[in-house]
Image 1 (cartoon, rainbow, N blue to C red):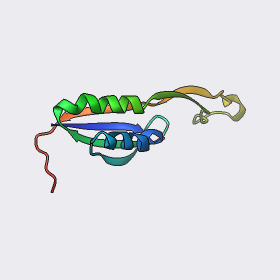
Image 2: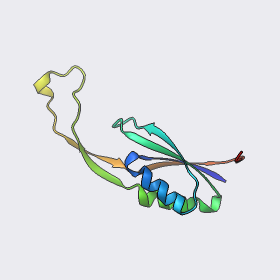
Image 3: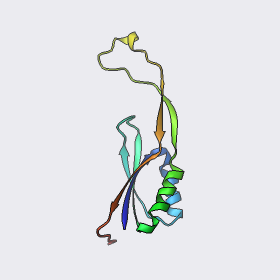
Image 4: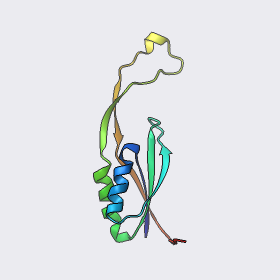
Amino acid sequence: MKLLFAIVSDEDSNILADNLNREGFGTTKLCSSGGFLKSGNTTFLIATDDTKVDRALGIIGDTCKSRRRMIAPEKLPGSFGAFNMAMPIEVNVGGATVFTLNIEQFLKL
């Protein structure tokens, strides 16, 4: 068996949960937050048979697409007011980060 840790954007979490459950994958959702934009993320724990890992990864990849967003940069520490008026920048958000681990034992109690 394998355990997938899938870290996805909050925007994608509900539809991902629906898509995984529709295909028979049980999930546990944990609230988490990202470091780059300090935006909300959801971490999914998915335990599955080795033969179904590719299908789970396919669902995650199809559901959690990367997209571009414009953000307004915050003022840098030590800046001097008007001299730090930066233009909004475009960044990639969304997508998924997935870790796959071997499960030594799986129990439902």
